[in-house]
Length: 79
Image (tube, rainbow, N blue to C red; front, top):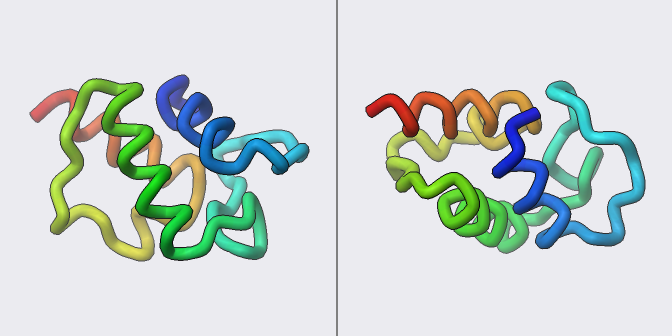
């Protein structure tokens, strides 16, 4: 998984003890993030990756898993 995503997740969800993979869900059923947690994660990822994520890209699908968020970060790096 993207290093920036993993770093931000460790800050936002330090109690999550599971292994992070591309398929790890970010929501309650996985890492345990609620809507505020998702917002904190996005801000942390932007800081860690040095990118600005477009609001239009912040869809439920894009924030569903570690991998989908990492793909969005990678896309932002190349824009």
